[in-house]
Length: 629
Image (cartoon, rainbow, N blue to C red; front, side, top):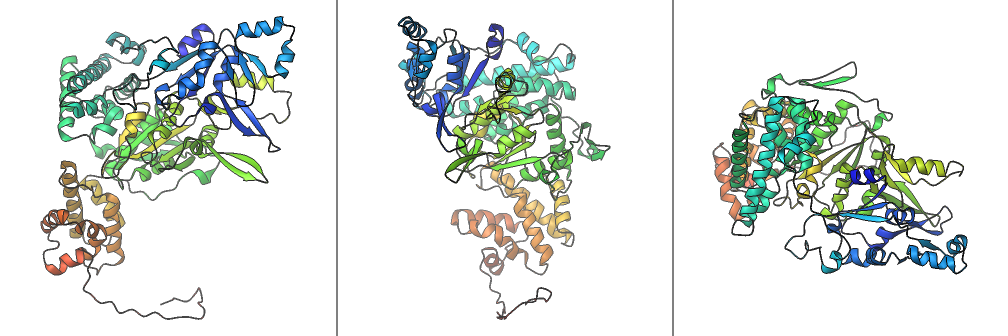
């Protein structure tokens, strides 16, 4: 769409569509001026209609059923529209008739009658309609609004031209890319074959890991930057979903990848620097280096926004930092997916700390809306005051926006992050618009308002240093998260942050509990490793995390005389209340010499038989320097 508009010499005005959008968002937005009076601002759609430019409705399939036709049907059919502020847009023919009746353009403007420019056009993008009522957006009414064109997948030769620039990539790189392109086609074919029948669930799961053009383009960049690291390119593209598929579907995907590698002659998919011992973190003369990847550190204007985190450099986490730094260097936004308590926040903060990058943080929840994500408003002296949200501040100042718990918000809300990451353009609820740096509209606005004192800001330029790191739990049970990857995953470079392996976890536990006996640490690490394997196999529901294991070790460090079963009760007592889980957990614990008697089982279940002698003394005053009992 952008290339088409550029060829025609038109400036596109993008409207990113989402489910909660109403006609007011598409046409006019209500706002207040400095005196508290109500004002109305035109949307990008109306600006395009008045100026004779192109309006791009991005993702009309997300709109509520019936909203698109009711809001813009008359504008597209008749070129006429009545607005909430009492103004009207009329067709060029109607406007000319009014002029021929003796009215001047100034008279019509005073009456708030405006012309829809003859060159005004609308381009809408959407995904194909689905079979369910929610996905069947292409109704008979909507079908009358547009001429339709299908965008088909590119053939291999054109994919190479788009994803592998002529200046880069040798024979091995082309072979690896051909394997990925063949793999993408094979996954789509297998998904179509499995869909619609008894294997419909398998088909939908396979379709989620089919590589899009965006993902193949990032894969091409990864292959050139890492000398044909095919496995790493696949991981960056779809590991956030592949890692959490059912074992049978995972095996099918790996089978398709191996067949694609063999067909393309790319050999065995290898990993970049598979030997963890080679990786180290170093900073020297303002340059951060992790393994073979290096990048200059930033010069933060606000040191207080740079995170400082307690972090243990385990081999697995250093490898994750190296992979994230490589994608950061390539200019990608990052998506970190994993179970709760695996260290997603820690790894993110550590990367930003090493880069000396300022952070803006936002945590999403079930009640998060698009407007609350983009704008903060307050009422002062009867006047609505707008404040930049964390997202807008990060965009404006070139900071990193960390979006935590992205799976908790509705998919219709977080999809705006896709517009920001991919298009670099997003309309804010107060009438402003986020645009890329050096957008022609910002120059035109500055020229038109150079003599206007305190002119209200219309555009927010995206700083080149802006990045997003999105954190999400795995979809579905047991965390009940939404499938963020299905909606937005292909615009991010994906990383799975899993629980550390036994070696990395032992290094972490030794750091947290240096005085805890080595035998206890080994027993706990092996116990939790087996429990996680059982969760992956579907024998238990909850994957016990590193966070819980660290809490146990810190408890033992502070209270070394407490029985191990008593400490473990903080983690297992809730699950042991369920009779269906009790025998499974007891069976695993007994393999490691835990909960082998009735007394220790009672301790593990949270029923301590030990009596504690405690006294409560009331004091009239307490001296801060004295020790209280």
